[in-house]
Image (cartoon, rainbow, N blue to C red):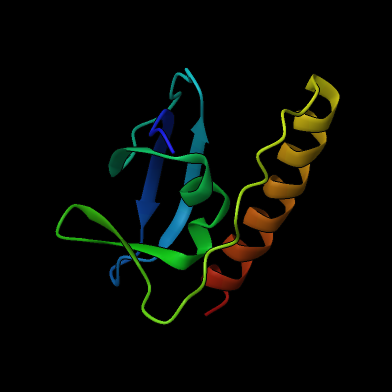
Length: 98
């Protein structure tokens, strides 16, 4: 899988990703702690990654969700991004309440 997804992220002191902005050919509108080029599978599984010594690493004993090989329409991509945003909001909310 090609690494053509841009990821900008901020982390807490433990390296957990607390805020992320990702996509193809995006332009960040704020300063971020880290930038990585990742694949779609990593993007869809960001909750299973952390940053250590400037490297994006998978949390031990986690299983990544596979990416379907089908091409999505623009409407399907938009719907999927909305779902991902909701999941990320929930994840960020759980991290800030910890």
